[in-house]
Length: 230
Image 1 (cartoon, rainbow, N blue to C red):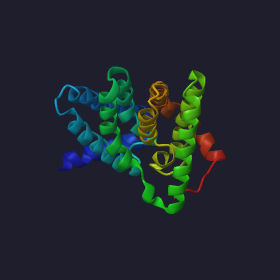
Image 2 (image 1 turned 120 degrees about the horizontal axis):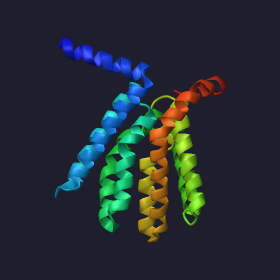
Image 3 (image 1 turned 90 degrees about the horizontal axis):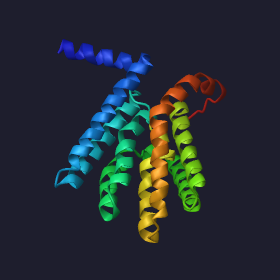
């Protein structure tokens, strides 16, 4: 028991004080989740397994995120690789079913709408603006890339300056993806899929490199911007 307690305390110390080692450990953990996803895709009951995995990832992200072991950007590492893989290696109705199974439980668990009415209203407005931007930008590669970069910057910036899980409340990549898929199904327009491919490629770049960038500029951000969110 003492051995377990000691190792847990060491892990906490690593996550709080040794940034590069924490990033390496998070990369290893996210790689294991991605490998598990690949294994699940070979099973006959892959939809059920993906639902369970998504729920487990969501619960883990909320717990470790709220306790500040994982940043919002760390959490993105656990879903971005699999989401991008689905877009490039599955097609049509199968792809949509897999994405809904993988993203829906996570999005429901991570979306902390219960923080308050003002937060819920602001969340609805922010996501509505993003979806409207996607509708406008989907026809153009550069506009799609621009919107994706803006979402990635907002996700990282909010994650650095606000309390844990605030990014998912205002800029939730899983909710954005699910809403865009529904638009594609309703409009029967494949350009939405093209946008989502660009979107998740951009988010992967932010997930794996954004933490390093914001780590070095965080002292400046904290000095000039000190929001009072709770």
